[in-house]
Length: 190
Image (cartoon, rainbow, N blue to C red; front, side, top):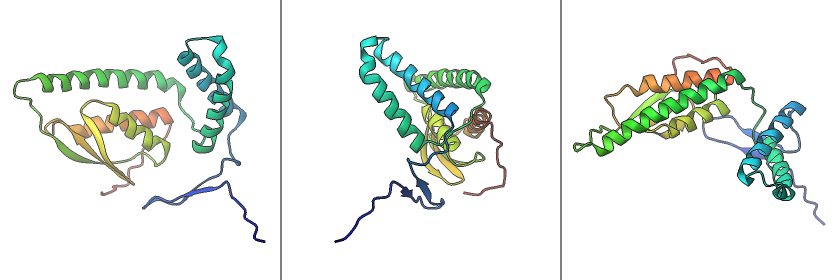
């Protein structure tokens, strides 16, 4: 009779990057990180349920499940908490300005757009900070990440005459400050 052993370790290999192993049974999370996640997911549940106390009978198991999954999939991250309000303000101002610009272009009779793909060399380390930057750029009006590669982004922009590189550099600097990490300038070429 054959014995089978099922390992909880998940292995993931992306071309150009080193192999990642995820083991949900072994985690480096500390009690503070777990408490922050419980507080975060509890707040989200409270908002989604509209404060209805009768919803907690399903909310507590959902929160615990979300905490377990987040610990298994997202390693502990250190944020510079006093940078969070500054980042939110930066994001809201950029979103409003970008949304206004996109609306103006769409409603203008000549529709002044000159789409282009720009290559932006990344100076932020791989992992969650790069993913966060990519998602931030995707949420800003007028930009869309077409390709994420180790070391660079290909970004679709609405107007090649505007300097998208300055905007992307500004986002990258804000994300680096938010995560408290230095930018790595090593002259990467895509």
